[in-house]
Image (cartoon, rainbow, N blue to C red; front, side):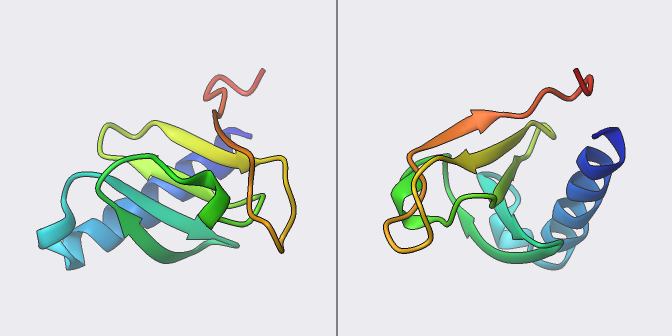
Length: 83
């Protein structure tokens, strides 16, 4: 899990470096690629389950529950200690 977290943080940091107008908020990542940005963590129903969000402090959240047609049910903090 630690490798995944670090990869997500690296991907988000690289994206933020190229998109300085979005240095805050959360970077949205699906299958290792940035697909969007939001000014805050919200609206899980607009994301498919399994998507990740990385905030500017490096905290990682995963969209869980729901389905691809109706979106996720909630954003859940990912345990960065891998437990």
